[in-house]
Every structure is written in C-alpha cells, then in structure tokens.
Image (tube, rainbow over all chains, first blue to last red; front, side):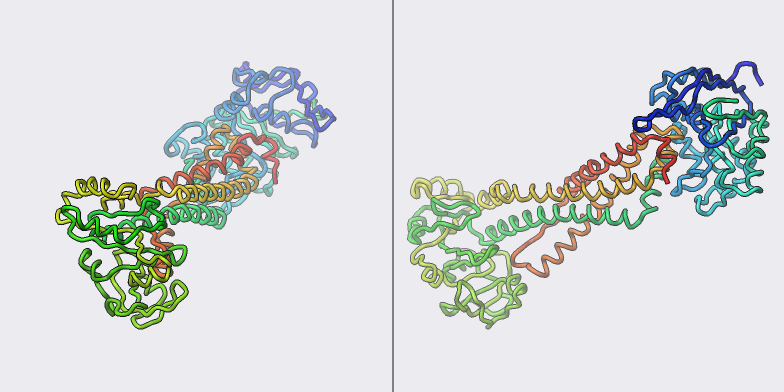
Length: 224
Length: 363
C-alpha cells in the first residue's frame, strides 16, 4: 500500500431535499482509502453508507466537503465529468447483479467496454480473469440461464473489464446463499491480492466485512 | 456492441416490436398505395388516350385535361377534315357514370378507321342503339358476359362485345344514343384527329389554332403528358394529408412503444449510466431501436403494397389501377423513419435524463 490515498474525503456532507424537508444523509465524513486496499463499510440502514457509495461512484454530487479520487476533485464536477469518472475510474457491483437481461454474459461485459470506447473482443489477458472468476464457460449464456453466484461473478467481470482504479461493491452477497457468498467474497479478495484492485464494499454482514483489510462503521451520516 | 444491444432489446419483446413494425408497415403501405393509385390511374388513362392512335385532339374551350365537362358541336370535325394533312377525324362524347368511370359514345365505323378498331375478346361491335361494348376489366369486375344486360345511365344496355383494354374508356356505346340520352344531340366532348404524316402535327395544330380559336388543341404526346398530379391539385393535397396522418400514426405507435420500453427498462438504463453511459449513448440506443423498427416497417410496407395491388386488381380492376412506384420507396421509408425518430425522441430524452440512482432503485 502507498502512503498517498487513492480516495481522500474530508468533511463530506450530503443533504437531500424531500419535499420541504431536508434529509442530512452525510454529516461530515472523513475517510482515506489507500490504493490496493480492500475496505469494508458497515452500518445500519440509513447510516449513509449508500449515499457515500453513490458519491464515491460519481452517481450524485456531494453538497459540501472535499473528495479527491485518483487525483480528481469530485466536488466541482459537472454531470458529464462524473459520467466520465464512472466510465474510466470506478466499477460497480450491485446486490441485485443488474445484468442486462437481453445480453449474454459476454455481451454484458463487452457493453462496458463499448461504453468506454474500447472496441473489439475481450483482451486475452482478461480471459485469465474470467477463468479466475470461473465463468469462462458461461459467457454465451443470458443472465436467466445463470445462477445467482454466476451472475454476480459476471457483474464483477463487467465492473473490472475497463481496469477501474476503484471497485465499488454494494452488498455484493446480499442475494446469495452462504456458499456463493463466500465464493464471491473470496474472489473479490483474490482480485485485490492478485491485481491490487482497490475495493470498497458496503455490507450489512459482519462476516462478509471481515474479508476486507479494514472495516469502517457508519452511523447517522458519520464514520464512527 | 450497441447494435447488438438494440437488436437484442427488440428481440426481447417480439410482440411489441411486431406491432410497431406492422403499424409502420401499414403507414408505408398507405402512402405507397395512394401514390401507386395516383400513378397507376393517371398512367392508365394516358395509355388509353394514346391507344386511340390519333395524332392530335381538339377539345371544347371550357374543358380541362381531367374534366370531361363541356361540349362542342360535332360539325367542328368537318372543318378539321378540310385542313391539309388531316387524314380522318372523329368526335366522341364522354359521360360520367360513377366516381371512377366514364362511358364513351362513338361513331364506330369512323372510329375504327381512325384507330384500327377494337380487339374483341368475346362478341363484337354493337349492332343496335342500345348495345354496349365493355373492356375486359369492366367485364371481370362486374362479371358481365356477352348477351348480359347492363344498367348504365339509368337504362338497360345489351352487351354486344368485350374488348381488350387499352383504348378510350371501359364502356362504349353508340354516339347517337348517348347524345340523345344526355341531351347532347349533335354535341361531342372531343375530336380525335389522325394525320397522313405525324411529322406534321405541330404544323397542323398551328393551323387549327387559327381556324378554331379558343378551342383546346393538343398533340397526343402533350395531352398524355398532362395526366400528372400537378394538374389535379386536390389529389396532390389529399395525398399529403394522408401522408401526414400516416406519419402521426407511426409517431404515436413508436411513442407508445418506446415509452413502455423506457419504463420497463428503467433499471437497465440506470445500469448503463452507472457504467458510464452518457445521455447521448442512451438516447442513441432508443433512437436506433426506433429506426430499426421503422426500417423493418418500411420493408414490410413495401411488400404489403404488392398485396394491396393484387387485391385492388382482383376486386376493382376497372375502377382503380395501382402502380408500384419504386421511386417512392425511399420517400415513404424516410417519412416512416422520421415519424419513428420523432416518436422515440420524447421517451429517449426522458431515459437520457433519468437519475441514475432512482433508476437503479426502480423495481
């Protein structure tokens, strides 16, 4: 791990306006994440971890504070710049897999490359990662023909195909049984170890959180 | 990859895609059928005018190309016959029987001399004042045979012969009978003129214009060239109204289809946004889907226009002739694609502007 954090967050606040009510989802979050770190973020519902996930992923702008990610300041970013950030710097893994149902596993991975303007078939070195994920034989199947564990592994492949600096995983085992959960978590740790992939994982599950190098706990919009 | 996603999306909802294709296909067929009817009917009329074999024709001062109204004294033919190079002339009287058809009254021996005569498929020339000759399409449409009685102009006629189409109107009767029946005794609608040398047509027309001031005198070439939609402004307007209506239908069909698609795919749109897809990328996908539906609809519509031609030819061959007009294929397709793109634009922009977080939370 390097001393220069890949994510540096100071005094991060996010306020949503729900009708006439202001909802303070984040109330001053400070957090550093080192490159190559596997960080687990745990906390109860409403603690602000999903909001933090969305801000780090460039899905929504912060209200105030500073957030630097891979050398870029997210606070003043326009929508287009945050779109570019999602394309080039972060990869998402969701609880519900969120594969496109009309495409095969291969199509789901290739669409991420297409969005990033990378043409052609999957690069040969990525085939090794597909083997590591254990889905190289399932690439021509559509999501409905894949098990939950396989779908989540395809989603992981899709998230890292463009070699993002940071992989964001939101409850990646939330829809999986214990066996598949352990397999997916082991894979995430393997990717982190072998490729040095920085991973931020949100989870309710303490057992899942323990797969990370470090666990931070959130409550009421703060990091404890 | 985008094309694959577009194609798979369309395949994923085959019924919705099919409905879109069929609606746009009907829109395209509507345009092509209408244009085909216009072209077919006008060119058929022009061909039948040419089929007479005359070199020029004289029409009353008040007449127009498409209107048979107005009459002139049949004795004008005598003055025409006196001109140099005029071999023979014959006057005919035309009277509308319904929206689509006219009956022609003619002096058969004189007309035969000018035209070379009718080619009969059954029966022969009229022998009696109440005889009628009909062409093959009129006979087919109404299932008439030689010897049958035909009701025309509120009186019965006896079918003496069925002739090969390609000359005059679809129904011909003795000139004198039609003149008396329509209170046009001694009158004709037009006079066909045959010259001894067709090369002298312009010269004879020039001479006749001096003799028959105010009468309309056309070479057959000029007359048949006037059978165009530009001479029937009402028809032209009607065609554009139908095209406009067709475009609205296509627009609404695609609008509804794409609106449903966007709603159904809200979460997928959120996923694409999370992957870094720009609003333009998402809009592009939906516009490509609409364009593909429109192109498939256009191809279907073109094929369907052959079916409508077949149906029209079998059901009403005497009334309507539908031509296949390939020149209008790209125009009809472009109209369909434009309508579809406009229809997809609203839902597409809605999708493109969708908030990624809300979209990802959509169930």
